Length: 299
Image (cartoon, rainbow, N blue to C red):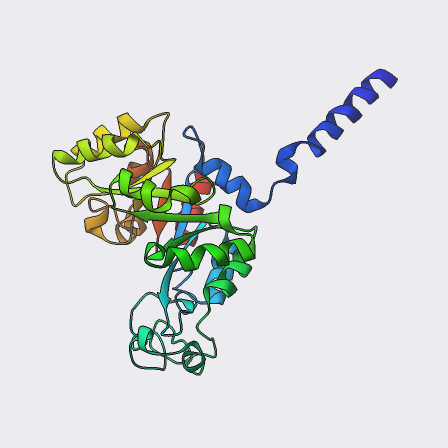
């Protein structure tokens, strides 16, 4: 009996001291993203939780993290004094109480405005800087920085200062060789994901060209016929994960979020089970996570 008890103690100690137990949640998600045989479906929340809070705001990020998303997608803009803020549009007009082009205004002036919610009502929330958003996300979630390639030399020092470099995903349509030339020295930590439009026969050639750089994942976009997506799915098996945007119909062959609310199996289920999509960007993260949990595809 003593020997059995000792064995259980040693086993428990090994689990407690294993490297995985020391990983942050963000690093665990990163491991899943880098695993081409990952069984989980990773959920990316578009502009954070914009249905519950002002888009790209700190509360929207916090809400998305708390509901269990794996990736928050945030957008970058730069002020006239070279400060990076989290904002989708190049102008303040739609989402804030201010007006004008961000590139013509200073950060101090932008700080005087407040974000609006989804029904155009002023809130008390300020427009966050990149640094503020990253500190909120630190160790908790991966971050897809949209439009970051325009300001990469300014982004990298902030990533290094905040210790969030390994949490960052960038995506783009640049050729693989150009990506390596521009960002190569950063790509050991920053994750770069090619975007391929899968609407024409030459799409497969573009997909294969990007495969030479061994990306951990691809974002695939298609309007209706998924013939070339299915071919890419076969080519990617055991090598890379596939990312799909369910934001509107022409990004995902008609399997968008709104259709998934009507029939989740015919849309989310189709994307996962038949097209082998293991990263889904959504405007309905809570609904998607609930669906995936019912099918043991998200923890």
